Length: 366
Image 1 (cartoon, rainbow, N blue to C red):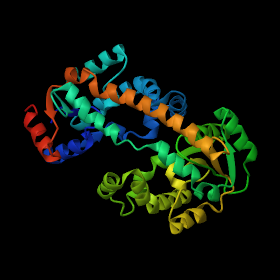
Image 2 (cartoon, rainbow, N blue to C red):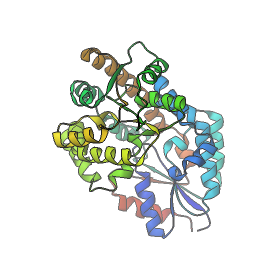
Image 3 (tube, one colour):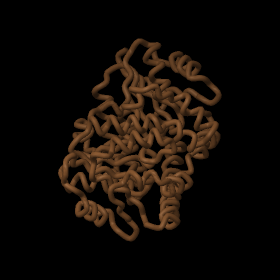
């Protein structure tokens, strides 16, 4: 194979699974653009702190716009590095809300013979409706946050509580720096519900102290792979029982994640995801409590000492966050550039992954 095969498509289409099946069928390599190392991303211009701050201030759409030039450079690099095999380009790397960047992307793919678009339907509006259904199942984090605020787990685990209402992230950072103990181990651990700013504050603390930042949300896949965690079972529980059922299923695996990260990561700032510090089962809670016991700097981040006020503030943040997500989702579903890129198109609605893969193979040049 003298040229790579590039798979593109909007959000909601499982490009990775089709790409892996194609690679297996064709006895060739599979390459996701996310396979680059942290050092390689840094050379491409990725700045994690800038992304975190931009997302906190403007939502995921603002973050998407910030990262567009870097993502275009990443596409240029992967097309230069990978001379054959299957390359998967997620929609954030192919669709640009900037005409100049979009034209540069068109030029990068112009000479690739096999650019295959995977999309649900030849009707763009029908595709948008089908893929928009993904957001209909988007968990209602406002309800989840209300549960997390009222659940006693966070306060039982925290050594200090910091309230963020009417404070900037810098002021919150400075309060934590003032309150933190310098005993060993020196890790600072941030817990609390979703959308309280833990990752943003963690980033600022890491910068101030010259430490690395570690986000548990980014490490779940790595450590869950060491367990019997079953993604298909988790997906079925989510369909049958909703987000609360899914969170209950995850609790033993989250406890294992926390134990493992605290064992493996040192001299860093660690921010927990909203569910990593809330447990209904006392056995799992006890595991996390034991793991955190030696750490003096466990900070619970909440908007307000008043639970109802915290819930109201977090609900407003969730609504703003979801609006930004929907804005980006719509762009990445409906953009006309997909049809301009594609040399071939496979429609995915009501087809199995095997059928999609077979059809894609039949369309390949040569």
